[in-house]
Image (cartoon, rainbow, N blue to C red):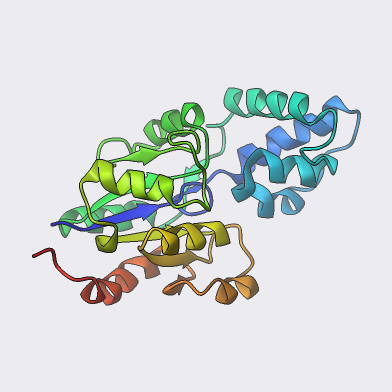
Length: 225
């Protein structure tokens, strides 16, 4: 079947926030600051090092110490990125359903490849995942469409026959720019009140809602002649 479902990783397939928040609080510890509550850091999990350093240290990329702390954050995260990270409830069942119905699926994340690939394997996703695109796989990161277009090319699928599921506005922007249908995962790290403004083709509040949405969107995608 010439159809492909692509997923963002953090906040869409996997709940990586606990390990990301722990790495962010390690940076506060290095500065002699008390840890922030998990609830304050969780919403930044989809924004990677930049978002977590902003939330934990109020540090932006133009700060003179930013690159040093970004490098340390990534080292700390890599050393303990599989401690609490799990798939969101319902994701294994969703992936099984896609496979049982002949659909292919892959991952497009802004996470750097050297972090993303081991996590994909750790979570047992590598066996059926047809393509994994990291933030440094191409010369661009989302919201640029190139990572999504690259995934479609690797899988040999027309972008018009792809659906992209993600929990950040840049996922929807990238998906639309790539000519794909988009699904906003409102169960991730985004605020539900913000999601409607992204103008995704559909919004889901749990992984269990993704398959019914795919079935509704699919008739709108023409079959390859």
